[in-house]
Length: 463
Image (tube, rainbow, N blue to C red; front, side, top):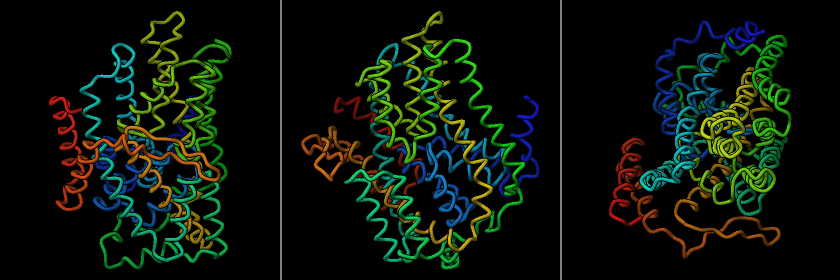
């Protein structure tokens, strides 16, 4: 059985494209992972800047096509996008490297911070560093929304659709799947005038984006046969569910590790729209139903995930850590917490590889279908509105210390408390934006300067 699983994972790992080399791609994905702060918007921005603009490995059209598919899936879209593009360039091995590296820094950071939190509480110096980091990430997110919007919204209809998507999800809490489905139907039926993705690629023929190393043809390994699909699905379902079933058989449903495995496996299947759409439910269950942690601790965990590299859904590792730390059984609390955090991470992210490795070959083969391209053009416009929503959400929670829930039907959104404005956060964000937009600083200098400023403000006693 193990031999069959290994063969299923690596059966298409040979013969990878020589452009770029696997070593070069690994370095690039490691860089993407280390800079992937700020939630989905920031992570997509970093990936777009490095993979599309700087390296020119993937065209704008292919990037948006892959992003549209990943936005339809449960789970963290940025991590799945990295897995998709890694698979596109270097088959299954490339997808494993890209998707795995994307979450590795977050796993390490959340685990270290969980140890610090469990033993000593939050360290002020680390909080100050993250304070500066968030300001720089906000500037990167704003730049990404502007850049992607300019390239994706090529007609008035698409701009209007992006605006409607933003208003719907931000002010009225319209479910994310409904927005994407409605956009696809509007594009497919021709209600929204779209410009096919392939046409946008031709339009930019005089620019720098059209010269991507992968070109526009589906790769050879995008062969969506029934046999391959069954084999890959069986492999990843086994990797995902075997630990869950084993824990239930050995320890029973009431054991904390069994509860972690089952609960977060359920979350992996319903997290449509990213972490923001499901965190309220996770917090409610973890705090009220299971009693794993308190509401302030849940907010502290969310702060950790927001200010460390990797998807925001990494907060689930902190929840799993605290759950097992407080219910260690015969194990030491720290060892139990480590196992609980890693178990939560495993059952959260293993399904992400399943969705990509099973579905990506079909999505690649459908890229030239006219009706699908029209639908995806509309979905792209809606995605711009959704990313703008995430950017504003992140900005509100970076610049303001408190928010108030507005729940007057049909309105449902979080409004900032103006009196809680943090002038230092606002000033640092404006400085980071000035450095990027006017001085043309790169991401690393901007991030490093903002982090250093945050620590300096802490040492001066300002924050």
